[in-house]
Length: 127
Image 1: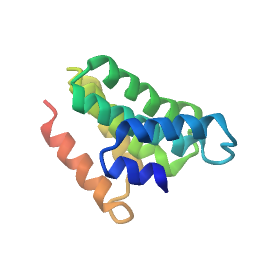
Image 2 (image 1 turned 45 degrees about the vertical axis):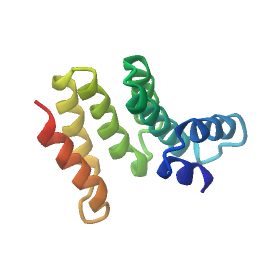
Image 3 (image 1 turned 30 degrees about the vertical axis):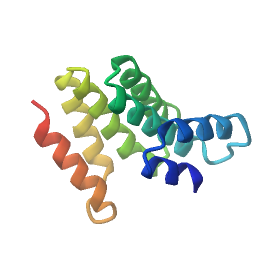
């Protein structure tokens, strides 16, 4: 979709605008995915700027997925993982490690090898 293409191309402002527009419309069955993508866009902006506040904002988007949509198995693991990354970036390695452990319960390496590889890399970088 357009949002994913914008994220892949590093157009995080554009992706964030599209996600926010989509969230104002009919989100039937798509809310958890849109919140996850909003978190990715916010995380991309945080990475570009180094703004800790934007990292925290991204973390909130990821945690909304796991809190409000606990049965959304597709987005649970990635959201836990990215929330862990946010905590790692803001210096909370203890929380990051717990979130990574939670993510590992929801990410199946056979089904999602790219996610499993990212999780493994993040875990090895965390103190």
